[in-house]
Length: 112
Ligand SMILES: Nc1ncnc2c1ncn2[C@@H]1O[C@H](COP(=O)(O)OP(=O)(O)OP(=O)(O)O)[C@@H](O)[C@H]1O
Ligand SMILES: [Mg+2]
Image 1: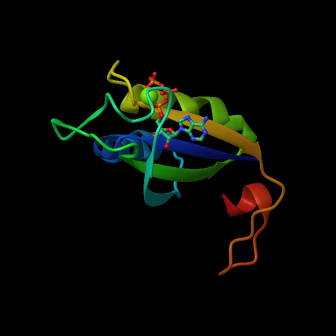
Image 2 (image 1 turned 90 degrees about the vertical axis):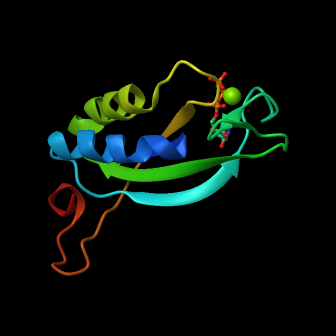
């Protein structure tokens, strides 16, 4: 199992959710956040306005997936979030050692 953390532009999250659902991947935590990448935030636009501070509004998505679903989940995220402009986002992937579904007690792949 893997945890995908994707920092994306806020407008992209509905499309990402729809594509993941099409793939049968359900479950995501979305956290409003701010960040900067290689441009240090200075040259990015947000809702048409130039952001003049060092941190630009983003959404951090945390998505736990079965290992077999990792590649298609990454494809779904990147194809939904890519505009070709700076600040489209970045993904980080971690190995995940444990998942427990609280209601049923199911674990790991059965809980995803
Ligand atoms: N090295 C990093 N560590 C942690 N978070 C990062 C890192 N790089 C980018 N981020 C997060 O991802 C967001 C989007 O990054 P961004 O897409 O601007 O990356 P980039 O490397 O500058 O690529 P681009 O040149 O396409 O803009 C940032 O606002 C920040 O929240
Ligand atoms: Mg950038």
